[in-house]
Amino acid sequence: MYETLEEEINSHLDYILHEPTLESFVQPREWEEVEHTDIALNPVFISIYDKNYNLVESSPNLVQNQLDWNKQEPEKIPFYAEYNSIQLLVSQAKLIHHGEIVGYLVVGVSTKHNQLALDYLKTTLLIIFPISVLLTFLLARFIAAKSIKPVFNVIHTAQSITENNLSERIQLPKNKDELFQLSATINSLLDRLEFQIIKAKQFSADASHELRTPLAIIKGTLEILIRRERTPEQYNEKIDYTLKQVNRLDRLVEQFLLLSRVENNSLELKTSLFELKSEVLKSIERFDVLLQEKQVLVKTDQLQNVKIDNYQEFFEIIIDNILSNAIKYSNLKGEINIYSNIKNNIYELIFEDNGIGMNKEDLRFVQERFFRVKNNSTLHISGSGLGLNIATQLAKMSNISMTIGSQLQKGTKIILTFNIEKF
Image: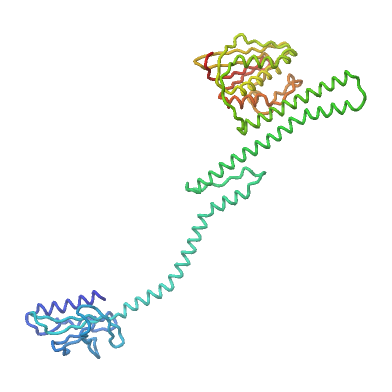
């Protein structure tokens, strides 16, 4: 509207200003244009006055009245007026010809179409806005539900995990965002918890299994003793046998406690510098009774003396368990050779026996907890199957490599490898 008004005003002013002889206030055929004849389709109303404010001409669509010059309104500044109940946007200007005021121009443009457009927009907004709000709400709810779904998956998974269902894990989102990191962290936590719980269950089952046998033997032996009177020699024999089982229980308990502390990393030990050969000789001395019973010869003449900086308590247990197994599975009047090899500050401590040995299949599992070789040669040999497992775990903690080789009926060789400082 404003552009139309400005265009009409400027067109008439330009025509009057540049017309050589002012014969008419309007251009030829001006009133034949549709906007000046019709009042329904974007009408433009024009009234022209002479310099004395007498009406000179009006556009054909002004069928009843003219547009009055309003002396209160400034020139070329649009204002609202009403014509035959039609609201108009009106602008007015002085007509100048050769520097002299020759008349006055009043131009009006109907605001009906603009009002219709505004009414249509208002109606449209009243209809579309609630629908848009509703659709936006539904879309936002859908997106929010989809976004929060992984959170509910986390909650659901956490609620479904029980002591008997430890393998359940949270499904990781496709996008690697903060929720992905949270889910991955929780899964890692669940892995650690499952591992600890499984170890606790395994420890409990293993302990009950291993302790049950000596307890049953002790119980059975004592029941036999109280059934009837026996000779002192018979009492001594049964009591001695019972004490052996009590000692076995004591060793089992100590091994279980040590194994538990190792697996839970609750051992707080510091390394120290000690002589390796001295520790080996002390271990041999601790097993002197067993060596004499089986008449097993231990050779250490090729064992080189070195100092190592390691966990001395762990090293004692490692060589005790290795030597205990070597004695246990040696034949009567067998031989155990303990010797060493040194090359480029790498020390190999080797335990080699000529006992019953084992086949390749048994060798694969010999370092696992409670594994024991079962054949005709081992039926009379007692044990818990914990010794090599404990030695293996302590060797790893001490940064000692343990290698086991064996041949059935020929013997077993165990090699401990570590860095040394030569003595």
